[in-house]
Image (cartoon, rainbow, N blue to C red; front, side):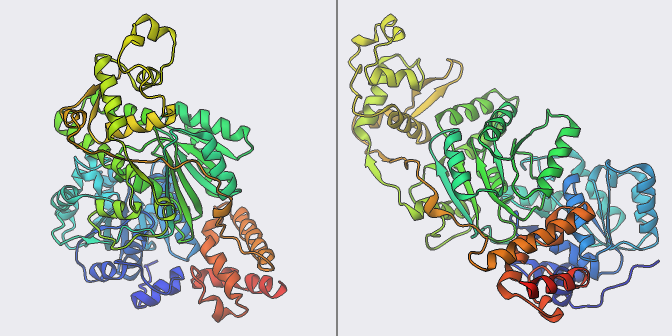
Length: 600
């Protein structure tokens, strides 16, 4: 059976197949580039709609679109969703048995597939290359293209071998896609994958995400307050730096009555698979994970992403927070970090086996995320500026825009802190220095005769929490460094001299105190009489998904439910105007939806 060519215009096909009435951002120009048989590089944020850029041309062009991805979860997720939209899609990866792979290969040879997903390792085998040379191909899409770059955040050597596509299939257009890539990484992608055209770079702004940063440092109670008061019964991801941290925090959240599960690489394959399946199918689940979790998973109704530790870079933070609110509805990116996070990440950099050039890059990235955390202006402006995008006015949807941060002249207290470091011979960590400044009379201070120092007790006016903030900001601003060979003792930098002499005025931010979230609850659920219809539609979605053993969002996502509740369509032609309902879904579920809405 030969694949039927879709003769619709791109915009008609977008609506008929995927249920979207218009393209987003750069999607349309990218689609037209591929339909014209031209190569392209696409930089588009997580949740920005990258998949449409290659899925639609794969359907419209003659032949099968070959999607190259290292993520099994992405393959399974996207193929399941495509099948619901009436698209003939399949994947080949290690999760399949040999007879299942053979069946898919026969579908490919019969030209009965619109889209085939495959890993880069399997693609470059002689068997697959020979197979592809015997069928018409619509395009090659290379997802996670930053993996080709040595300086990308997830380098994979097998991506370098994808140059074989240009050699074996010179007339098949290629599209490379990634969510984040600086200029050097973009150039390396273009060079190694032989894509010469200028990249299409979409806006990095995700206006539906609200950014919030707390200086508490691994504050589980603050996280609990945030979840219970702002996102009760909703899906979220909580990121931790360590595997042990994921287990401890998941167990603690479970003890507080939340549906929380840990996820990290050391757990058994079976347990990780079970957790992933529950995450995809349940509506109120929270996964506490290391940073790898979530890659390739297009679950649209993740209402929050929380970080209990400082991320390693702005790129990592941006990608991880981008897993929230993919449906375009309100979502939160919440972070709590502290002094210990800074020490841990700095220690990881300095103790790594990387060469000095790589360490310089990692230090720069850490400085970038620290700067983002400590800003006193709109966070979204800082975030977008990092990616070379200018936001001319404050966003109004971050913690600083909602509650501007107060600043104060910290020159005098900074001099006290620096003097204490110097008087104690630059050997001690923050907590001990604070004890000296606050005149604590403990055994260690007595044994070291530090009660006799001129700096003993000169900082009683600040609490321990306030002093931690001062030291954290001194480290971030470069007046103090951490000596890892000296067990984390603080040392004065060269720039500290100007501050000690009073030649520099130091402005510090006042840390925002933890607040109640009750007044900020922003549920997507409707109030009043529409709430019953909302719940009825959710139950229908869940029942359909359960019968087919697929995640509920494969049926319709929350944005579709919102549109159904708001517009209350009672005719088939009205259903076709609903966001996310294409012809296949209307044909399958339309009569039931109309009946439910009329009965409301």
